[in-house]
Structures are given as structure tokens and as C-alpha cells.
Length: 180
Ligand SMILES: Cc1cc2nc3c(=O)[nH]c(=O)nc-3n(C[C@H](O)[C@H](O)[C@H](O)COP(=O)(O)O)c2cc1C
Image (cartoon, rainbow, N blue to C red; front, side, top):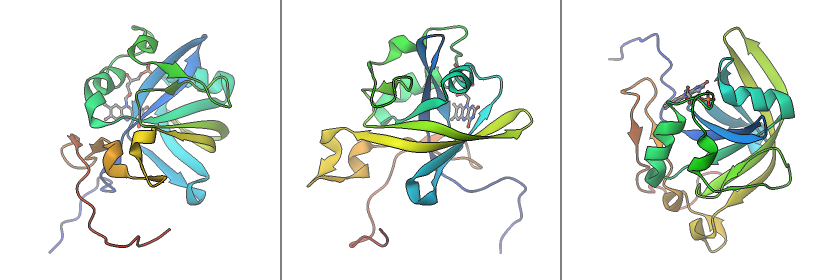
């Protein structure tokens, strides 16, 4: 027997650190509500208009998406609770740039993606940002025979609709890949 709840239970979601250049300084925030679509060629995330990171996204029309591993949870907590208006979050990480020169990428995150903004959906207090994936970067240590193994990335999973806490990725259960 199922119970009907009003909350969105599409969960868990991997949290990401979205980066932008605000007044020439890299800034990062935690985003829980993100998703790839168009079979991975585009991605989407929700951002409140008051976020400092949004300033850089609107200015340069670029941003980065970085997947932190569980070891980075303390820094993730800073990025998700303190605003770049009040502290300098650029000092938390080593930063590099790829093809786009205004999307700061995080060296310590095993996966980083640079994106160009293609659409901003106005939802009142927040925007839905749609980005085109320009390039993805992965730490060599997460590749097995040149293929990404997510167990080595150790992403932080966020239990939206549940206790809103962080979780580890579990074990692989499929012997063969179910879908490519
Ligand atoms: C688990 C988690 C998920 C979050 N998801 C979002 C989100 O989807 N959209 C958003 O605007 N803020 C989200 N936040 C809040 C921002 O990360 C936070 O307010 C941050 O300090 C804003 O930084 P900034 O002002 O430097 O941009 C989330 C925070 C946490 C801890």
C-alpha cells in the first residue's frame, strides 16, 4: 500500500559544485537539483536568483559543473552554506580552465564539466539554467581500461525528499551494462 506525499521523491541526486567567475574571482556553490538531458549533451539546474554564483553565470554565460568525491564533504559544506559575498571560496580549491576561459574547474573534483548557457527559464525566485556541455574532464585514477568507473569517483548522493542527508554510492548490481 502506497502513501501519497506532496514532495518530489525523485531521489537521491548527486550533488555538484557549480562554478562561475564573479568579478574575476572563481566562486562555487552546491547544487542539489541538477540533471542531464538531450542524452547528456545538455544539462539543467535550479538556482535561486539571490545566489552570488549566478552573477558570474549571467555575466559570462558560462559555468562549470564539478562532481566532488566523499572526501571533499567538508569543503562541500562550506560551499553549500556560505556565500561568496561573505567569504572567498576560490581559496578552497586548486582551479584550472579548459576551453572556456570563464568557467573555473576544480582540480580536486574527479569530474569537471564546462558549459555554455543556452537558456534561462524564469521561475520567479529561481532560474532553471540550461547549459550545453562543451567539454568534460575526468581524473585518470577514475578510469579503468579507459572507461569511467563511478565507484572510483565516489560521488556524494543527496537524499532529497528523505532526510536530505548525504550518502555513498553502493555496489554495482548489473553484470553487463543495461543501457548505453
Ligand atoms: C545539499 C544542498 C543542495 C543545494 N541545492 C541548491 C540548489 O539546487 N539551488 C540553489 O540555488 N541553492 C542550493 N543550495 C544552496 C547553496 O549552495 C548555498 O546557498 C550557497 O551558500 C550559495 O553560495 P553563493 O551565494 O556563493 O552562490 C544547496 C545547498 C545544499 C547544502
